[in-house]
Structures are given as C-alpha cells and as structure tokens.
Image (cartoon, rainbow, N blue to C red; front, side, top):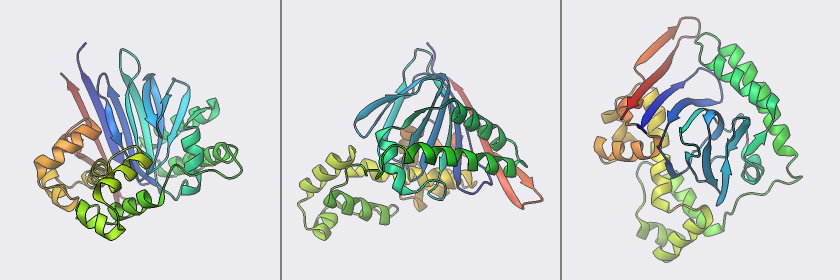
Length: 284
C-alpha cells in the first residue's frame, strides 16, 4: 500500500480556536506528545488508536474525542486504509483546566448530536467570512462538551501529578525556548537528575526532553500559520537551526514545516485580518 498524506491547517479568526487541522494518513503514527490546547477530534474515515494517560482508546466513526492539554498521547491508524480526521484546537477560554481529569477518564464521546455539531463547526470554519457562524456553532459545541464533562464526576480528578514532576513541568513551561539543563533543574528542585527524569516520566508517561520538544513544535505550528518561514521560526522556538526544527516537526506533525506553512492568505476587509490555509498532498 502506498503511503499517502494530506494535510490542511489554518487559524481562523474565531476566539478560542488556536488551529484547525485536517489530515489523511495511511501509515503515519504520532509518537507520544503534548499540546497546550484542547484537541477536539472527529474521524471521517477509518479509525485512530491512541494512548492517553496509559489507557488505550479508539475513535469509531460516530465518536467525538476530546483530548485535554498537558496530557501526553500518541496516535496511529487502526484500520488498513489509515484515517481521515478533522481537529479543532481550543484554548482554555473555551474549556478550563478543571475539566482535564474528566476528559482523561473518558475522552471518547458517543453523542450523535455533538458529532453533527462538530461537523457543522468545521464546515463554517472552512469558509472565510463566516466567522460569526463558526463562533456560534463553537459556543453550542462547548456547552455540550461541558455538560458531558460535568456529568462524569461531582469533583473531576486531575491526572497523576506528583509534586516533583509538576514542578519540573512548570520549569519546562517557563523556559520552552531557552530550555533548562537537567543539572540546573535538579539543583533548583533539590533532586538527583536521574530521580527527576524518573519522576517526570512516571507522572506523565513521557520523558522531559520529549515534553519540551512537543511544546516547541506547538509554538512552531502557530508561527508557521502566522506566515513566518521555517528558518525564522526555528531560533525563536528553541531549535538549533532549521534542520533541527524539521526533524522534530515532521516526527510530531507528519509533514515538514515548509510544507505545513500557510501559502495562501485571504484578506477580509471587514475584520482586517488574514485567514491562512495550507494544503499539502503527498504520495510516496
């Protein structure tokens, strides 16, 4: 079977939406990584198998998946023909961190009405000039998501987050671009470097360096959608050079930053902002 990749990515002018990402992958598998935004995912063809908080999950055609920020997950095709997915990344203004525990407990939602509304949201997001409709539809989607999450538990639990691991994560989050040597982190946190790595990996299921790289790639995605060239993006997101960025970006996103970068902008004179979209097709 030939390897096929199709990627469409853009940032609409809708408050709370950090990125829209459509993709078709036949064989590509995502390694463990994190996002600093909520991942709202639907699969139109095939299915995705993924691990979240060390639990395996799947995405049948009628499922809406909601993956919380800061919790590592991966993803790979669960069917021979791969999968075709549509994703909206949402910031904390749409869903707060208080829902993370409930989302970890049950990220896959069987709700035909929600599935229909998310599809309608994507249709509106794909049309420049229909931002008000998209925002209206997103408001209804967010309301239904919160209803699901509130019913999971009276007091949603947080994912495993021991104090030492959380303190290291806070250090990494504060120094995404500059990074922090393990020895310095160990000194600041009064812990042996090996113990620090074990604590972080045990709490989050991902080593500190992999967490940091996925945060850097997340920042790179946003800057590429803003129209910056990969060579400009690399140094301001913590990568040594463009080759360093490309290696990690392709591993986590499935395409190179140059191919991901938006190449078409549509100006909206009524809102004074650019709507950027990128489409990439690859047959190997």
